[in-house]
Image 1 (cartoon, helix red, strand yellow):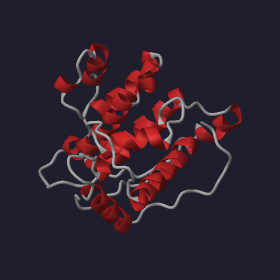
Image 2 (cartoon, rainbow, N blue to C red):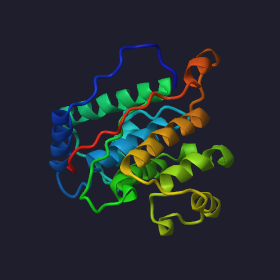
Image 3 (cartoon, rainbow, N blue to C red):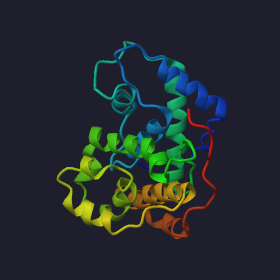
Image 4 (cartoon, helix red, strand yellow):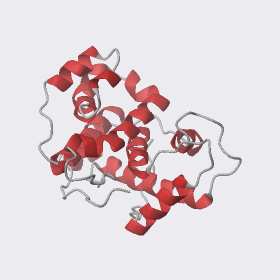
Length: 220
């Protein structure tokens, strides 16, 4: 999955995010695309696979959650925006660097878990559509997966007794900032398992990801 060095991907602006959501909403029925927050979690799940997932495999489950045939041609602008985010996230994961998940505030009464739930649901959808990550040894995956899946309804985690036990040992996040930091930390921990760094990179990587405050914008 390693690639030659190249320029960092340009982060999508607020206008780009609005446009991406509009393009997803414009997909014809009966397609059921992910929204932008779910798509972001989904792309992280795709990028954590131990082998690179090509566009022709990762795009269809994002465009339609039910796996129906896609239109003969998907809007080029939509694909370009998704590929830009894919590249941006990939560079962050390769460098074990902080990234801002596309998590958007709900109303003031929403809990941190409710707010990050769409992102986590998208991540879980990726692991259902691309199961290679889950075929790796279970033990090193448990802690980061539990940190992500603690935001899901336990009833959605069937036949996952060990994972549920790990989740029960965790304290839920006290605020949205802690919840978002948990998403990023879990992604980078999973990357250490499924996409281990080359020997010469490990010294820099283990300094830990740079921290920044999570993006907090209006819900789309």
